[in-house]
Length: 227
View 1: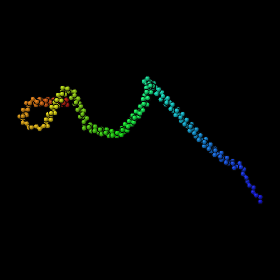
View 2: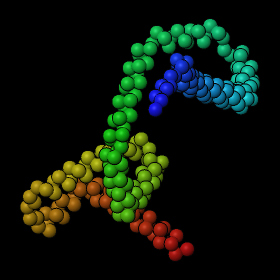
View 3: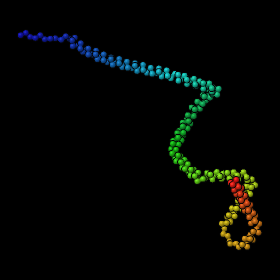
View 4: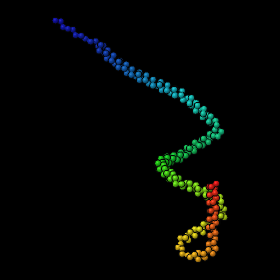
């Protein structure tokens, strides 16, 4: 029986698959890189397109704003000067710290206002309630009537009459103070004797004049009401 001949493999047959696998791997890496470059190119194109659309939409608005600003500057150009603007800008730069402190104080005041706001609202509500109670009780009407009475008195009284009224008020107050003192019982004879006192007679005359004026005023008021 003849022996089976051994099969031999050529050296290039084993190297060919390895080279093909390496080539495929390189092609895969190259495909990934190409896909990344394509994606970056598309992203760049998209951003450029968005910028172009933004510029296309913003240019008319910017042109309108520039035209409006030009018109406004034309109206006030005779009132402003470049040196004034520069001087103002320098002052702002020099007083930067002062402005910063002022803003801090303003923020503190705002915080205080926010804190005190509820308290102020409560106080305002209480004051409003008290004013409503006073109005229901007629205090405002009484004050208004008193104001009209004072206006009438001020328009009718003279400086000499005011002095006389002040002197009479002193006398009346002294008389009322005398009422607080204990009074001894007096007989009718002693009372009639006091009627001969000139001061008593003057006092009675004043009282009679006051009563006569009050009666005349009441009579005129009754006639006006009846009419």
